[in-house]
Amino acid sequence: MNKYIEVWCDGNCKNNQAKDKSLTIGGRAYILIFGDKYKEYSFAERNTTNNVQELTALIEALSDLKRYDIPLKIFPDSMYMINSLTTWIYGWKKNGWMTKEKEPVKNKELIVKLDGLLSKFNKWEISHVDGHANIKYNERCDELANLAIKALLDKETCTK
View (cartoon, helix red, strand yellow):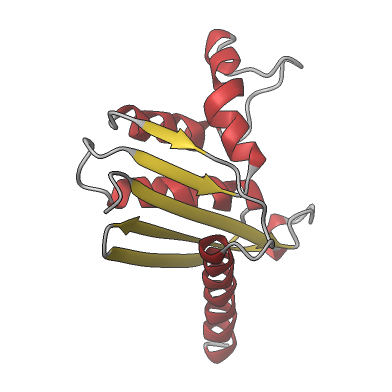
């Protein structure tokens, strides 16, 4: 049995580059694996971005965990998430949550929340996985996020 909890997460956003964020729809998903225990979760919403969905997927996964003494291995396909949590955060904190271009850090509230959640765990590591590269649990998270978007669109169509 693994001596760590696997956390797989992914997020996406349709029309991510739209200037009008009301045209965006994002999905997110996570999978938790510990020994023979397995849990999946997904959700979709409007007015969002890809990065918000990536970060929120991990926030929800970590919030779902009840024990902090078991090490975590986190597997996202988002370099934005990884860099935010392992590299950029130190400069942002030092510079009052401003970028080196003197702009406010985007998604600060989500990154602060993730930093607080991760600080509860005795040990964690994060490893990048390539998206859309036939990696089983990354592919499943992507599928779940897309199914959540489809379900939201179907629901909206039915209520019109």
